[in-house]
Image 1 (tube, one colour):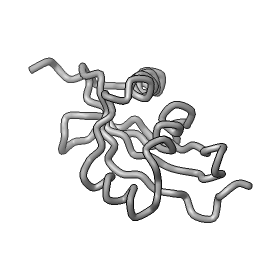
Image 2 (cartoon, rainbow, N blue to C red; image 1 turned 90 degrees about the horizontal axis):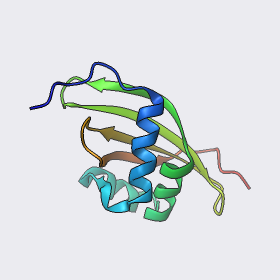
Image 3 (cartoon, one colour; image 1 turned 135 degrees about the horizontal axis):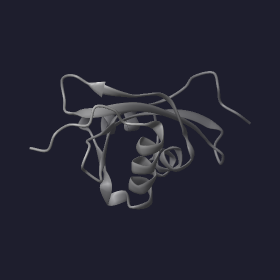
Image 4 (spheres, rainbow, N blue to C red; image 1 turned 180 degrees about the horizontal axis):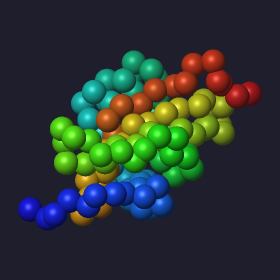
Length: 111
């Protein structure tokens, strides 16, 4: 087991997230997030757009239960005006990311 980093900068986090968004095979979606995407009618292309263009609004913070870092991204999907938040887990030393959950920020649809 590799030693765990004690910090993860926003720059490092966004680089990992953008890389995964460019190589979608590196995006793992939790069962919970898959259910929420269906319930909330959020498509995979919308999620990828947020991963590619969104901003980190919270974190990255260390998850004390799982050996990873979590951060919240928010972005607007220009074609639909939806403001979407994605909770992302990043495991240090891995190229992929895990989508923990995803939701539409209500009352913020842009038109």
